[in-house]
Image (cartoon, rainbow, N blue to C red; front, top):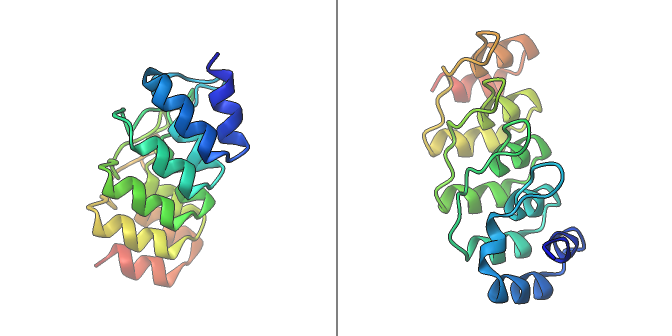
Length: 155
């Protein structure tokens, strides 16, 4: 039954998503075959409208998929700044890490998303968190030679 919700999200059909969640609000906690919640899937597809509709229902905004990634992490490597703003405003934790110890800030740095790095820093992202290899966001920025991001991370 929840496959209808996941299909509506994939099709970015905000009307159907809204109706299904109104009828079955508990579906917001379900996961698809890859371990993605409705919120994570909506953000992956970059739909602000569907993301907003899903955020209207109580849930764990930092729910993790099968490898520990959150919706915020996904939008940081895809570059969806407006959706990152929605998630952070709704209480997403910028310092949550996946199963490899990587944070949303690390993804934004690795993919050169300067605006997202700035946004995450405004919401208290810690540039000194270490991933599973002991590397920080600052280390990754230095390795990439990204002077603008380095400046943001160093304050």
